[in-house]
Image (cartoon, rainbow, N blue to C red; front, side, top):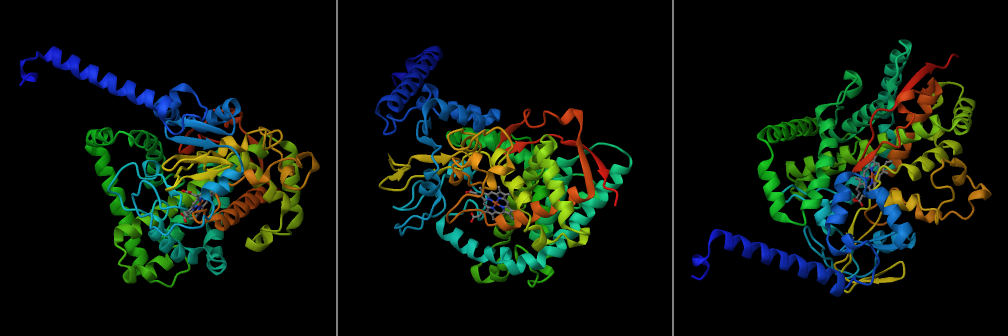
Length: 507
Ligand code: HEM
């Protein structure tokens, strides 16, 4: 009743005062009483999550993490409830297999049973109501999906997939040859994307996206980059659920229709793949075989095929773009690698899964590029389970969000000598790098949720790079000399054009 007798101005003033008091109390609690109060970090990050979110949305978070570790040490409080680690031991403590814990840690759990570090839902599932896939599933569903999908990544499957993969690389080389004849510069980052998307499209949906045929991005592929960028906003807003609802309500209907069209298109692809029969050694064969038994809905199948596309193509193409850039700007490494490739094989037909895996310098070049330009550059957060955990020798209370940030870890000179310089030799036993902490390097993660496609990724990267360098001499275009330094990271690298002149090798 008393409230009714207040004027609008007085109600607003009261509301504003209450909000200010609430925020001040929250900030004071975070700074003075929170269980993480003893961990160092910048004031804004310790006091509120905005310090983290603003960097994430600005695309600079992974780079800022390095500066934070250099200033505050191996453990930094990067949000009131989140710690970032740059100690190699943290990989095992956070991602590794952990004993104990029987609980399911099912979808949406805030905190797992003892022994289990769950993925942090506010990062992995910022928008509710979408079907879960192998990457963001809870523990039990994940174990089931992983066992079934692992089949498609087996050596046998991989051997059977070889002709499919080689077929797309044949097409890539043909297309690049056509373009090199006109002497025009070629955006290799785009061409690597076309190739890896077509390969994974074929292996996960039974048909390519036609990017190499059309010499262009398929709209579905373009949408991935937009979704990744929008993801930084939703991951930031996930801490304030009413804002997520508000932003979702404000999305123009044009975008929702566009999304609907994408869903329909992938569904149609999936149905065609299902009609093609179950005996096809691709990445979804195992899932399709078990679909009826497990009652997997079409939406679940679609979500898992789609995540294979995102996880399996953009990552590999990013690394190929990175390694090409490093080679183009490090003449000695480029000379050694082309000598290895062109000196080992007598003809292009000899370059296959088995033979390309025997080239040590090629592998060292890829690993050094993975270190300097990790396709997953950010930290992928986990939540400390009930009872707390010891991470790199530090007691961390339950419910704390914890992560290791790849790019920052790999550019820290406590772990790698000359971290900003491209030295493939560090992976070949060169004594100059004997003090490097190689165990700090985990671009595919470790433990029960590590990358399922690691072998496929190495095979694709080795084959594509070997065949490009077998066929062409490369020269970087003037406008791409600073390709690396201009980039931002919105969950994925925003790569931009990598323009290169190609000259076919005369034989
Ligand atoms: C250079 C290339 C690649 C890198 C650096 C990479 C990195 C990673 C990382 C860091 C994770 C862990 C994600 C997390 O913890 O949330 C992951 C998971 C995964 N990756 Fe890759 N990946 C690459 C290529 C591929 C390829 C080619 C595929 C094939 C489709 C693939 C399929 C997967 C799958 C299915 C998972 C989820 C595994 C699980 O949760 O059990 N990746 N990858």
